[in-house]
Image (cartoon, rainbow, N blue to C red; front, side, top):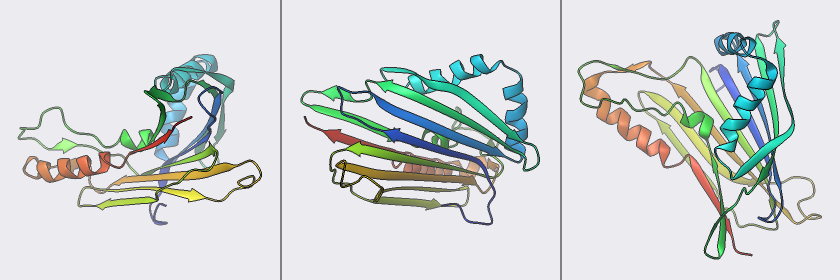
Amino acid sequence: MAPPTIPVTQDVEQKYVVNHAHAQSYLTVKTTYRGLEAERWRRYLESKPLVELGEEYANYYASFFNALDLMRPLTISDDLETNEVTVNEAYVIEGLWSKSEDAYTFVVSGDIVDDYLTKPDLIRRKTPFRFGTEGAVRQKIKLSLPESWEIEASNHTINGPYFEFQSSLSKISAPGETLFDKTYVEANYFYRSKKRHVEASELRQYLGDIDDAWNSVDYEFTYRP
């Protein structure tokens, strides 16, 4: 999804095996840091014991669901030759679905990319607002949904003077689609900053682009048993 000339310094792939509300669901996460991001995260990851890091990462995802537990311990691989650090996580999720009256709802979010869609605390200002990161951020979410689902494809792009943002949702084909009555869906997100600051006089246009991006960060799935 990223243009080939833009280095992706943070690459996240999240895979959900989604089951009905009465059953457990599963999530695996693979995050690859490259270049300066790898060097920054290498220092951070080396500062804490692996068990403590595992709890820290698990607590982040636990904030999205009613209950979450480790499926297997967090692992880290460090390739100094390519300057890449890869973090692998795996979780069992209880209560992935939220119930409202007679319907169950589950929301996937471009949470990693969303972290870069920031606004200043002080809107009325005279100084520039600093934002963004070096390189690009890419997030892919793959979902295996129970039963057949009608999926409305979506594609949204912002390519303004301050940052580039893309989000998309589409149904994809995968083994077992017919045999196991599954629906496979993929959500893709991409972000890169074109500047590292916004002048105070240009802030309103930047804020409008952020609001526009926020409107296409989440995708909701609903079913009635």
